[in-house]
Image (cartoon, rainbow over all chains, first blue to last red):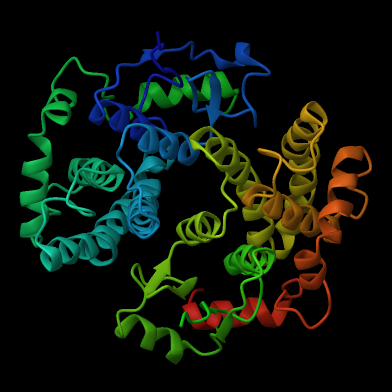
Length: 217
Length: 223
């Protein structure tokens, strides 16, 4: 009998959110581990979270975890070249998500600048790429005409950027259609409903709590 | 007839060095085009060659590949350096990601302001000695095999070798408390493909200097 994966992290989005998305898309239920992770001494390979207990492993490093989940639950192509495209698309999205992930840690002044940067990069560097991909092959999904890790990562990014820049998709009709289509996939629809394991946008309380755990100012 | 992969980057280590290491270890010959001017870079963007307007760019098997991890992952998969099943891949990925975090500190070091360099150097040494090297020392000790994962050479071993040498350039005695890693380094150095890569005249690039830093800043037109 296989156990549910157990996720060890703070009670917030951070680096773990992409993992929650991917497990949810694959319809894999998961449990929450203790996020007072100091007590996990020795269980954290590089002394860092996220950590996911899965299939007898204590996995760390977000990309490694996502890659394993994608491979296991058929969200990663078998063909090496199709994998390569998924990897490139995922890495691009992650660069954009990194700008958002650190946003709440910045001072109000820096946040203003960062917001402009997020909007600019999304609109000129990243979203045009995915709009073009969808336009060129006219399929429903980014790679191989089936839902993959790249699609899940992209929908997460779209929704997360929209929280900060609500009109960001105004120039991208195919991404709008993509967003509607992927949101209505049963597993993802469920994840987007209240009461799911999806976390709220990071707020001040979560930041203060994290700082206390790390003994940071 | 299959063509050689073509690497487009600055004439220095940076993010492309890991790709050079991996191709060399897999005994794959490659060509290089060096970015010396902003005009070259702008042209690549205008031609649509750079998916996210960034280098590294590797032209391989008909693809214009960007994003270092995607490139390395493809090469590892193609040349049998990625383990034999999903779990071995998982360990290779975890090790590679940890090493990449350390390599990133080294990569950014030449671009840090002079007043921060001493602190950054100390941090590199501290992280290597307390966070990263102990993990690989322990892994090698526990299974007693020559390589990190699955008893055969993988991307993780190549990446570890690269980072050991890179840290040693900054802190020569960094392996003094790590006998397994010392033996690992010797073993890896003696593998024919790696031995060749470590010799003068190979595609291996020297440590970054001021000229490299100013070229990167000029080409990317960053402050």
